[in-house]
Image (cartoon, rainbow, N blue to C red):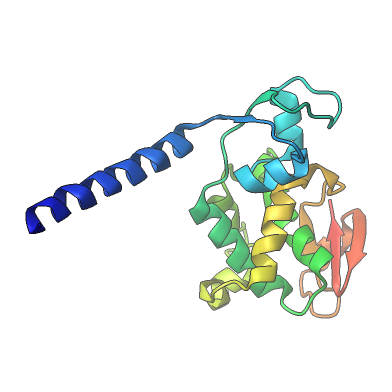
Length: 196
């Protein structure tokens, strides 16, 4: 009996690994009843606009059975790092403010004046020798993110285009850099001012 247990366990593990590999290699999704671009954006960690662009869709309408190509996703490691930053930067802020903080990082990744990855944006050191985000400098980024911060990151990824182009945020009550106040304000959420 024991000699059959090992091959069975190995077979199950191999099947499980094959399914994970197939999912990881999958770059398409067949639309099911009830699917929306927003849900797919969250499920696959991609933006709604990137799905629309890749599939030449002018609207968000989906047809059951339609096969959508999917862009490369933001990795689990990147989402976790961004979630920890959001948790550290926007703790106590409204949910919309947490989404906006995550969106600032994503906008910087897409902006020509900033680094090209989430990790590089978060760890960027400016010309003055200071980190772009204080939680990196003070170590608060190493604290685990709560569920709300993780959900805010997922929403920011799915709807990045709805951000009004914000690439900065600050709390005017505690900001020491007065240059930031000269940037074009896009929105105020909680104690944070967002700008571009």
